[in-house]
Image (cartoon, rainbow, N blue to C red; front, side, top):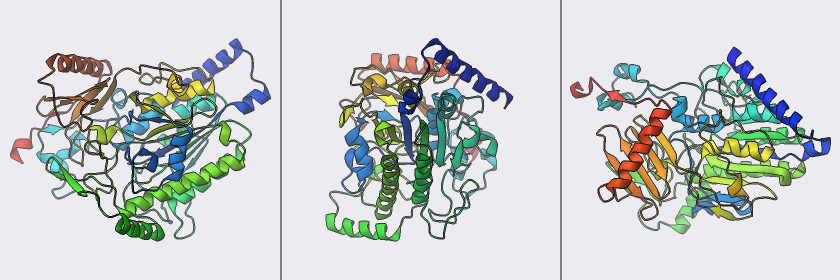
Length: 497
């Protein structure tokens, strides 16, 4: 904690020094600084909105962000699972650099031999590798995005899912947020999405109160109370993560809609030896998506009523791809391969929308590959605050793209040295332009895909382009060494299981 306090003061000194070097902001200029509404969905796939390709889910408010801002069609989460991506957004660093590479609660390698047979994750005991050891919280030494904005004069508010540390000292109120409504250790809402919530950072509402509604109401109240000064509102939905349940009226709506629209082709396919949903037709999931969208609409109403809608930067993304394999497989990531828990595109490509009022052309589209670590420096630049390159080491400001200019973001990297409950094996990956290379750790196998020609990642062309594969593998391994990445190790008990 002592180190973190020093870093906060040091950051404040940097900000004050920067202010001293230039003209001081007047009260009117301070009031005109943009606000931020950052909306993070949980397990929402890249195509799980009307504007992003769904022919079943109804999401007019998410669609509005795309219509009024920029749709990054090659926007990525930092990981195929939740906690690493959330840490990357907060820190501006790749999860491999933080050694926070798996969802918090996944088995550590030293615990795997003692997992009771029959427990849902016990299959890992029989596999060839032990996953890498991972850090179990977002370290307090990291100067978070919220801390950087707060030091720059922003009020900060968090609502919803945190999942970045078991102990309260790692929760949002100790990571830069003035107010925390609902953020704690858990990665899902518990038994369902209705009060009582049994959440130590969110008081229970009336019986039957719906969690997305409640998070929207808390967020709207903060906006109305903070309209006269710049603010960061970080609305981190638990939706549409399992457990799968929604309002009864919305479930019935989509049961009837499914009957009307029918099925256009098969509903399920295969990914290896696993069944995979390939069509959006799950009524409960559709209701979860609409209830989240309705909650977003309530927050938009609060921005408008407070007179700050046109001075608020709105960002929308998800922490990984949609859950299309295992655990009810409620959604589909078509046309991308696989889903949550997989390092293929369906697991890491995410909705990625940004609206910068007065700057971003409405309805604009960027195909530049970008990643969630980029939000940190982008938001600092939009706010007119000093960048922190030693903190957001793996992020690059996307402000040029938002201004309509060209930008070469450079290669993107992923490191998931774990087995996922959805079926993928330990791997790392690099995307550089149209090329994507995956390195598998069980057998040292390399997969190379030309995403411009093969967005489904069905044709491994490593044998046909050995020079490209060798170059990308070398770059990936050099990068992994530079961030001191941790790797899986042989499982001494695998052969005896």
